[in-house]
Image (cartoon, rainbow, N blue to C red; front, side, top):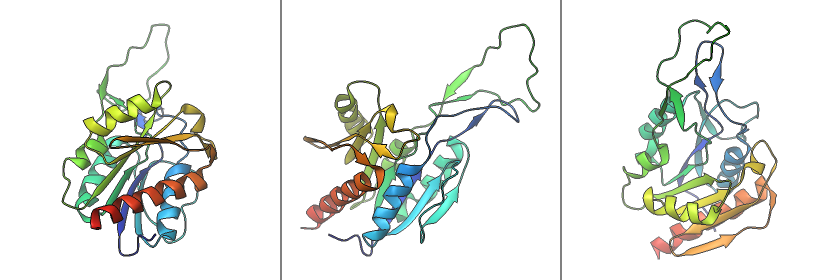
Length: 215
């Protein structure tokens, strides 16, 4: 099965939500899964763009990478490109919250408690799917600590997606992943393994879904 002639847009890695010029909220995502998906899609013949948060990893060859830092930047770059993509994969571990006000100077330590007001970041894959044009396919990732499949099914319906890949926190900053794919009316648990192998399985399922629509 091939993605030749298709354009794939992937969000990848963490975001950083700065508190002041030197401190930020983030998570342990390395961006490895997003780059593995990019490599698998490229190998299947697709033209691939990755919108990547901060990562120390080298991107696959032949992939166009747009570097961002914060969730609002990732949303802007994703929505700019979403209509031109055939497949949109939201694999990034986007911070759910950001501070209401970023301080212009370093917050100095003292003996008083520091209270932060956090506001929710936008749901990037949901906002992208709301701009859906005919023929597009939207894939989300769900990192859960319990009831992975149930939460993935909820996200599938709530965000208007075609496929959700659920996984746990053990996959963060790791070369391996244990995942469950959830589609409309079906669930498939994947054997734990290297992210590169699981990415190929996810891309094969995306290709199958696209071909099924074409038939």
